[in-house]
Amino acid sequence: MKQNEMIRLGMIAVLLTQTLIAMAASDMGPPAATLRAAAEARGMHIGSSVDEDALRTDTDYAGVLAREFDSLTPENSMKFAESHPAPFRYTFADGDAVVDFAEKHNMQVHGHVLVWHEQLPKWLTQGHWTHAQLRKILREYIFRIVGHYQGRVNVWDVVSEAVDDNGAMRQTFWSRGLGPDYIALAFQWAHEANPDALLLYNDYGGDGGGAKADAIFKLVQRLHEQGVPINGVGLQMHTSVDDPPDTKAVSANMARLHQLGLQVYITEMDVMIKLPVTRAKLEAQAGIYRNMMSVCLAAENCHNFTSWGFTDRYSWIPQFFPGNGAALIFDEQMQAKPSYRALMDVLSASGASSP
Ligand code: G3I
Image 1 (cartoon, rainbow, N blue to C red):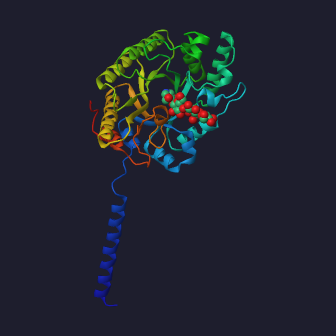
Image 2: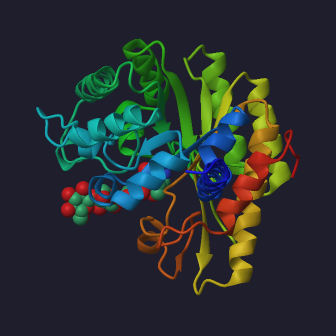
Image 3: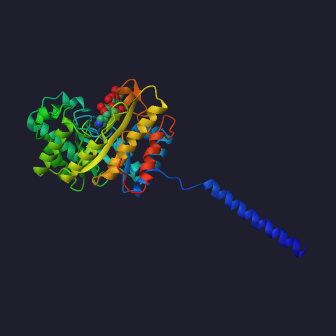
């Protein structure tokens, strides 16, 4: 073969190789940014509650969950009725599946919820217990659940929703059976069961200002001053486009909790929309997500932003608030909504931006 022919063939081979490399690079595109990568860069954990049935049955759901989030809150499987359905029976299968998934995908698990007035089993609520018997039941329950997840679940909603919407202490099965000390007892037992766990009081409707927020603040201030092992407060942040949270009030509430030395978690955020969904409502929803992420980023004591679900395909809202829905950051087809983009924009902006 003549030398010129060999040189020509060589040049063609080089050009072909360069073309193939360029094509491969363009297919890869820019590094796929995700919420969890953007959040990690800002020292923030971004979480979602997890629907245990969807995790088991919907591969799209599991894929997005692992890709976008680094913190999981079991939606139901670690609640009393699900974990302790009968006097001598505990069931951990669904909770274990959530923790297994989280560990496989390098995610933390937010234990939810040791003491709540809802989702209690009938054997408990219909029993006739003395104070001593009920105290024994709750103490054993807390030690059993926290102990089972020892080392795998290190953040717990210890008590949820002990304050009523008007700011009074809520009258519940637990307060009636054990008196107001049930709250301090629950935190004490959870701490004894896992001294390394971060223990939260979790509530809705007290995210910013107002009577309920003040009552929650007074409650946790009293617990803290009594030496009760409480580490933080969960602001559930169940909101709506029609009643957005007051950004300045939420920021001030976080600041006063910081002065107590308490962490703040956004634990259950969703922003419901009165149907039908419109572009304007989606943009308003995105603004609310944007503002709350900005407030959390700007607060010294807020490092976990968790929504109550992440896709409209699985949300508690339509069942509990008929005529409302579309509260989350992915739609029913698992496509990112303007709210997703808003969170990504805030997380990707340089430095903590005040809203
Ligand atoms: O597990 C039973 C099943 O055995 C039964 O067949 C089925 C039909 O009745 O019900 C199943 O229990 C349901 C449970 O979710 C598990 O799917 C309950 O009926 C249903 O009421 C329960 O709803 C949960 C709700 O709390 C209960 O108030 C929602 O999924 C859950 O998203 C919601 O989450 C709460 C947080 O835990 C605390 N903060 C408020 C938030 C919204 O209420």
